[in-house]
Amino acid sequence: MTADAGTYLYAVAGDSGTPVPEGLTGVAGTPVRAVRASGLVAYVSTVSLDEFGEEPLSRSMEDLDWLDATARAHHHVVEAVAAESPAVPVRLVTVYSGDEQVLALLEERGDDFGEALSRVAGRREWGVKVYAEPDDQAAEPAEQGGGAATGPGAAYLKRRQAGLRSREEAWRRAAARAERVHDVLASIAVASRRHRAQDPQLSGRKEWMVLNGAYLVDDDRAEEFARAVDDLRAQGGELELTGPWAPYSFATLDEGVAP
Amino acid sequence: MMEPVRPVGRAYPSSSGGGGREPTNLGDILERVLDRGVIIAGDIRVNLLDIELLTIKLRLIVASVDTAREMGIDWWEHDPWLTGGKDRGLEEENRRLRRRLSELEGDRRSDRPIEGRVVEREPAREYEDYEEDYEDAPGYEDEEPEPEPVRRRPERGRRAEGRRRHDG
Image (cartoon, rainbow over the protein chains, first blue to last red):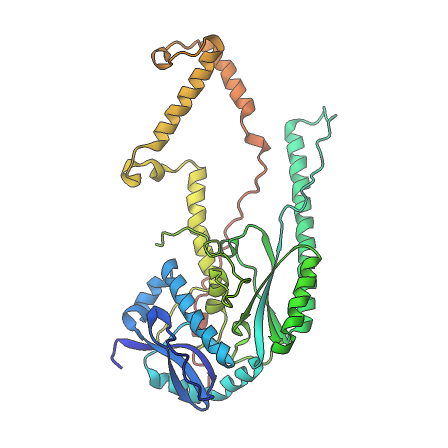
């Protein structure tokens, strides 16, 4: 390995001796390889430090197009690997100076990886988002006709106040609903996480996101989970289900089982 | 700085349905690959933007463009050097003025070509016109909530470093 190449790590899985999915490519179109040690397999590819060195990364991480392509490539490998066997995804742009460092990692943290893997084995992550319309209050109090005493200014303030009040009210209702949805889904899942709501910039939607939940669900309860989502959706309001995902939200090395 | 101002999510329709297993919403993917997954420090130290910082950054760009526009600072949209074309703003204004003028004239005369008549305005009418315009102005019906202030957060892109080489 030359000085200006690095080893990019995507995910770690238990080594069942299965070969790397054929033709699997990762970031910057590099072929994915396996590094095996301690009963584990690390999925990696060799990347150029011209692109994945500290200096260039500090720039390109802010380049949306680059980030888009790289995030998708990373995600693609993680999903491909996790489809074969339980895998622990590693965060984007984790780059080592060479394969030896990855080997050392597998040896040093083998037990932790083993534990993390056993937590996600036979389970998938599902994402559920709940949206709420900011102006549920559609019907605003109609203009009272006889307000001769109230000028347009006072009327405006009144309307604005009412608007704010119903906005608050709508928000409270939506939050309560999010709570209910989360409780129902969490009771089916093995573990659950509530992530912070996505910015409209990220979700591409104007509505409030009141729940951004991740649920680790046993494979044999996946259908039950999907049914519960349908039932909740039928109760009204917008509910978005994504997945199954590799267990991104539940892959941790240093924490115990999720509460 | 980065140029693109497009919202991350919208460009890629979410495809939770359909045969493809892989959701294509970039927002969902970014959220996962940046904020979740095992965090181990590699040998290359990356000042990883966390997803929130990234979106704040995007929003700042969008916000600054919008704010500028609201304040009427939009010269770049009309600067022939930048747009590489004709001055559309001026054209638009011309068209507006012409339309207004012909409306005014329509009050008195049948349609005539407006070109030769620009000078003949009676000052007396101007005041009334002004009043009409004022009442028509959409000023206070507008209930648009003020744009939310951009939340600022202390730099926290360094999370990875904090957990670097967790005693193993």
